[in-house]
Amino acid sequence: MAFTGSTEVGRAVGLAAAQKIIPSTLELGGKSANIFFDDCNFEHAIDDATMGILFSQGQICVAGSRIFVQDTFYDKFIDALIKEFNSVKVGHSMDPNTMMGAIVNEKQLKKILEYIKIGESEGCKIGCGGVQMTENGLDKGFYMKPTLLLNATNKMRVAQEEIFGPVGVVIKFHDVDEVIAMANDSVYGLGGAVWTKDINKAIKVARAVETGRMWINTYHGMPDGAPFGGYKESGIGRECHKVILEHYTQMKNIMINLDEKPSGLYPKAY
Image (spheres, rainbow, N blue to C red):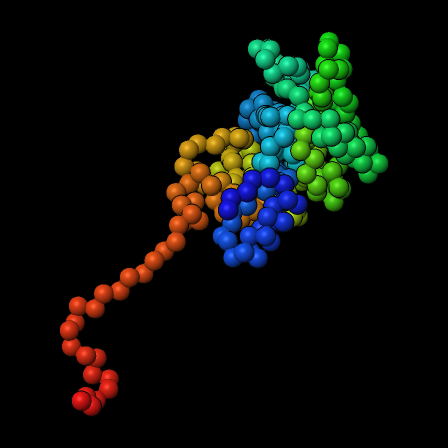
């Protein structure tokens, strides 16, 4: 049995499979860390910080929803990121000029808006967005303005719980060890990325963050054959790689004795 969906439903599916002794793989939720150091390629980083959370309206399990920014260039990074978010054209998916489409349904839109209220109550500041879009005919669908929640801490609900929408939660950090600890302080472990020109630092962070996939200086690249799956409550198993075949097959052992002589362990009594 293979399931892709929320951790809540996946847990129920996994329990049902276990009760019937059915093997299962689970590709579940995430709250992935997108980590930006001050020595990154700035233009590329801004572009993929945007793509990381706004791709598919943020309605993707591997979205880079926790945006960790080093304090040494925080203001510069956030100023540019806000401008980038505000430039994203939201609209009907059939419009070739559209960069971000609609939320899947009204229920999910209300959930996203409720999380924004929760973030404000926890002390976040709305850097941009935070509201439903209704102008130019968008009131006929469920459209959300790209949103950044600033002044967040990693302990807040908006930083720990999956919102599943175009809402980036921005968290400031100072050094490598601090951001690794915060990235790992999560029940999830599906995706993530690190941005730096220092390959040693990049590898250290990529190896240390407890997640099934870690990008370096990119986000959402999903080439064929690259294993995909989660640690912790983000799931069990790896898809897209040949290792997934092991979950769909049973190994059988057939032994053939080519020696026609008895074992000799027991005396011949006949």
